Length: 170
Image (cartoon, rainbow, N blue to C red; front, side, top):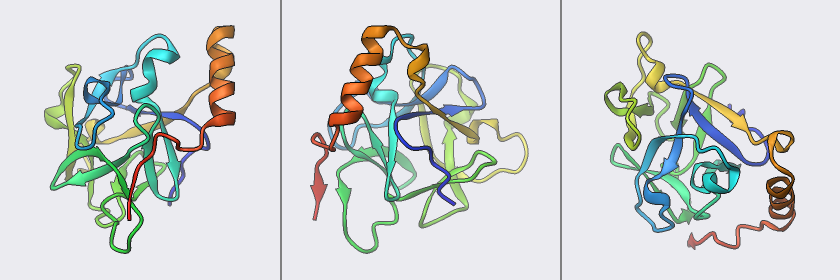
């Protein structure tokens, strides 16, 4: 049920194709909110909008932190490698739902169907109709559409990235 692509990708809303999951204010701090934000033009400006999947965790490229449900709000947080950390592990269904391992009936949702930049992303009960604000596409980063400088930087980062920015709770 993971269905996540390898490498870096955007989590893009089907509601408005310019809105992607992003960390509020490009923060690298724990407890920063996850919001919906228009995808920026240049890859280097999108570090807080890029994600990877590692053993159940969604990891933000800019901060190295994972995504956590905190009550029903979605924030970034240090990864916990403990039993019972299912509030930090995620699944993606091909029909577009992204949900925490501990409750497949709660899914990522853009609050109030908002299309405003910075709209809150939270967990909400899965809807079966009128639900585009709950459906997501995982869009891989294609180096073929980048400038030579950006492509070189992406290639270097992919070779060298070892979650050096990541922090963990044990």
